[in-house]
Length: 323
Ligand code: FES
Image (cartoon, rainbow, N blue to C red; front, side, top):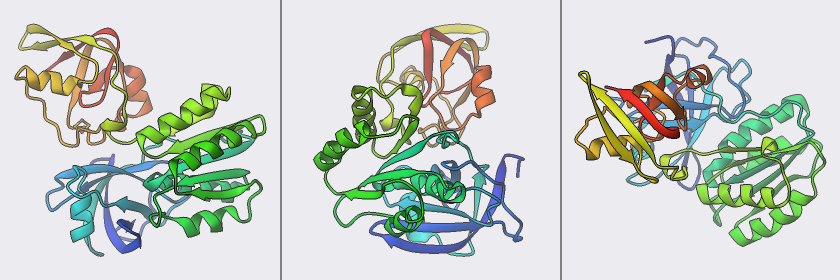
């Protein structure tokens, strides 16, 4: 077990909404777990051999946690291992995790927190609400979900009830959400920060509406999981050095660095293909990476010495890596 990984034991598994399973994890010896920033995610290895890895938002506030709590949507046939988790995971089983990573933290100085969630994207919003409850922050929540499929509805009500602000509003129709958004976005006190997590198309719609309403980018925060949520990116030229020999490949828009290498017969170890497991890490020898992964830490991203080939790209016309 490295300093970046944890062994956890499953202490509870509960079905809390249609196709949503809540899982509670703890230290096997009952020790406190490392704290985390609200909105953080936990990368878990799932399966008998740890063959799937995926990132899940932690739903607590992260202060001296005795447990880590996640909620997992069942995606039949999906690549993240949710089939296995929903079918096989039982209390008492052990799982390996990486230390929680912050990717969607609340801004402490915000005047109000406008929290917008779609579907299972409600999980980091619940974490934000636990933190808001702890600090008495002003909140407004918009939660969109398909009829009968809302998750954590009780938590949203309970956590927002004592807080200042308009509380929770739910909707089960995309058009209804967009109509409410146009009003809500224009009615916020100066200094409000907006946080959105959900399907990629919903995030794009919310950010676009906020831009149209004059919100500065510095007050907009979004959480995207999965390569399909990423925009196709700009084309660039990739130079790969192997055994002292350099080759050049064009990486088109919409095609990943990893896919480009595979198309040219260059094998790169990979597992999640979603920027969470770390398997496809390549050393960077030239150019600047455009990091879009959830694996590298902020300091590693700033150093620019490695790139996750499955999701990240070049910040400029060229990138050089070695194998
Ligand atoms: S394959 Fe998992 S981070 Fe790229």
